[in-house]
Image 1 (cartoon, helix red, strand yellow):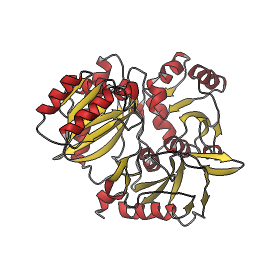
Image 2: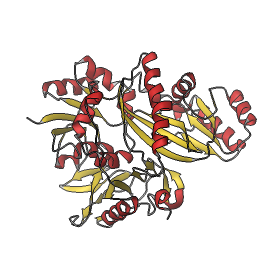
Image 3: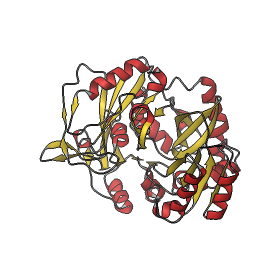
Image 4: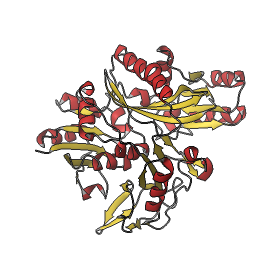
Length: 419
C-alpha cells in the first residue's frame, strides 16, 4: 500500500518535494498551490493542532515541513506531542534560523568558523564597533525572520550606521530588527550546502549555488532567489570534507549539548575564502530555489531519505545521487519584488522535447485556468550531463512558458560556465 505524506507549504520547494515522491506516496498539501492539485490533494487547515488531528485521523505516515515560519512557531513540537512522524527541527532547534543572534553566539561557543561580529541592541555600541572596523563593506543583519531580506551590505560606515538606526528603531524590519548583528564582510564566493539530519547522523547533499539578485550580472535588489544550480564544480571533495568535520559535525554535537538535537534540513550558507569555509548563516529548511534542483538529483527513494531522517535511521540508508547537473531558472511576475502583480494566465507549450520539469510556486487555479498570482511564479529546471547542457535545457523550458509580465535572469549558472 502507498504511504501517505503531508507536505506543509505552498511554494516551489514544497512542489518539488511532492513531485519527486508522488510515485512512492499519496501526497497531501497544507495548503499547496494551484498546480499541486494536479498530483496531490490540497487541504486548507492553518492551525497546527487541527492539522495534527487531521493527520492522525487520515493515518499520515510522514509530514514534511517546507518553510521556516511554522518550524520556528513550533509545528514539529505539536505533531510529536500527538505521536506523529514529522521531518523538521523543534522550535528550540529552529532558533538557528529564527534568531541570528542565537546562531552567531552558537557558532562562537562551538568554534565553528564565521566572520568577526558584534550583536547588540545598543546604538552606541554598534557605532563603536563600526568605527573600529578597518574594511568595507560592512554587513548589518536584523536578528529575527525577515523572509531572507534582513541583511544589508553597507558600502560605507555612514550607511552602516543609518541601517543600524533604521533597524533598532523598528523602521526597517519592525520587531525583527530590534537587535542587530554587525559583522565583517568576507571576500570570497558563496555556496549553499544542505545536510539531512536526524539529531545524530547526517547526509550531505550536493552543493548548490543560488542567485539572489533580481538582474543579470548580480545587479538589482536582493530577492528570495532567481535561480540555482547543483552540484557546483566550485565545491571540491576537500571542501566537502572540511564542511563535514569543521561545521556539520560540531553543529550536531553542539545542538545536543544545548538540549535541542537538530533534526531536519540544515541549510548552511557558506562563504569560501581561499578554499576555507566560513558560515554566513544557517537556515533550518531547504532553500528555494535550490530544493527544486536537489530533489531532481536524488536517485534513491526520496521518501526513505525524509522518513529515515525523521525517525533517526539515516545510518540505515544509502542516499544515491544521479550523475547529472540540474539548473533552475525562476520566472517571476511583472512587479516582483517591488509589489504584487495582476493575475496572468499561464500557458505552457509541449515539453516532450525537453529534459527537465517545471516546479510551480506562486500560482492559483481561477475558473479552471492556472494563473500566475505570486512573486516567484515557477522554476524551470533543466537536466544535463554538465552545467552548460543543463542550463540550455532550463532555458529551452523557459521559452515554452508564457504569461504576461514574465521576468527572469538570462545568466543563471554563469559562475560555473564563465559566461
